[in-house]
Length: 79
Image (cartoon, rainbow, N blue to C red):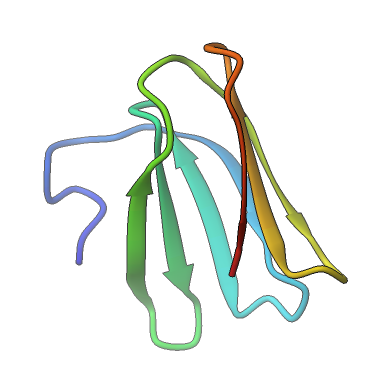
């Protein structure tokens, strides 16, 4: 997988997993990319919103990702 596979996407927000193995990058397009830093690849991606992303947070002890956007969406999912 490549972050530029569907064209250039600007990364707006970044969060890091507790051990630093994963980086969660929230793009202007509303897509959340999960980078595996040990293998140097995009492990997966998920469309989270279609309206202005506002942030991404990784909860260190609960192992969840939270994304929020200008369309009043707040998404929580276990990683």
